[in-house]
Length: 72
Image 1 (cartoon, rainbow, N blue to C red):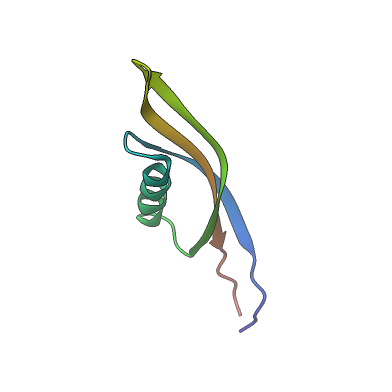
Image 2: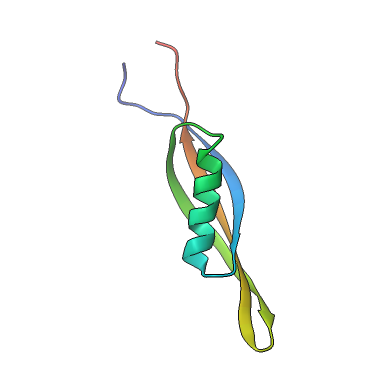
């Protein structure tokens, strides 16, 4: 077993009517249901929808890092 890791990055967009943090959480929770070895994320972009002068919807673009399983 080696201490070196190789990662694959994918880009996701999480959304929420509550907050940008909730949008991030929703994306990670959903990705965790089908992806293995998720180790990290980075927020790339944040945007939202305005309705009646208030934030109605948050969208957060994030990159997820997945550690690849390597054969020994």
